[in-house]
Amino acid sequence: MRIAVGAFLTDETIRPVRLARELEERGFGGLYLPEHTHIPVSRDTPAPMGEPLPREYGRTLDPFVALAAAAVVTTRIGLGTGVALVAQRDPIVLAKEIATLDLLSDGRFTLGVGLGWNEEEARDHGVDWPRRRTAVRDKVAVMRALWAAEPTPYEGEFASVSASDAHPKPHRPVPVLLGGAVGPRLFADIAAYADGWLPIGGRGLDESVARLRHAWNAAGRTGEPRVVPYGLRPTHDRLARLRDLGITEAVAQLPPAGTEDVLRTLDEYAQFL
Image 1: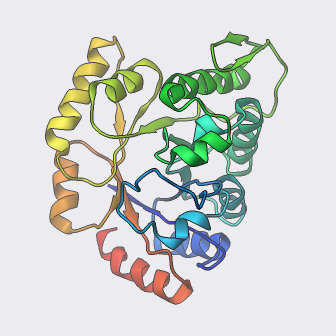
Image 2: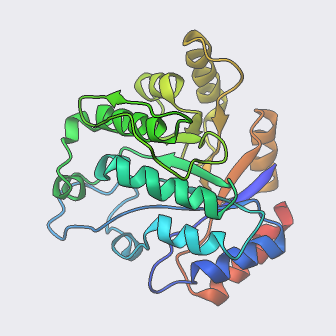
């Protein structure tokens, strides 16, 4: 099983270049970074991870810039978002950013996509909160149209693009993993247009993975959906259960801390490689 890490990188933590180099030297499989553009102080949306909202949420680095820095000092580790808030972004600009990052990393990028939880943050971006699920689907489709080998149009309710010349092209189809809570709507979306699921934690996956595979097969998809549990506190028993489910990658959570604390945690996690 490939062991990657996820981290809230901020202006107060270890820098992405140092972290990426340390991961590659130790043999970790990848680095996933989350996204928040800002956290309005008038927030009314309760934080799903509990209150008070941790300090790092309002200080995160832009994941695409940070991953680009990581890409140019490494050659092997995977790079991904965990998760990007696609509803808040211009998909034409984002398609260019991702294709450029994919070029710089020689095809090592995975796009983890989330719907978001902070309504106030999304509102500042002009997001229609109740319909953000459809907006995300349209924006992913626009990006794929721009990444296609030939000029390809897409017309959607929330995003459209005319047939266009758009380069660079990704090395291979960019894997898209949807994050979110267990449910028929999420699994239907994954089966409809994504490549897999990015669940938080590793608990309760026996039944959930079976339900996802059922939705996948019912939609006529071939192969298996990719499942990458995110934010794990790894143990040998937990990772063994994931392997039994056919899961080939897991993302262990690092603390939002300085260099010494993060490197100490990496050394603890190295036993699972």
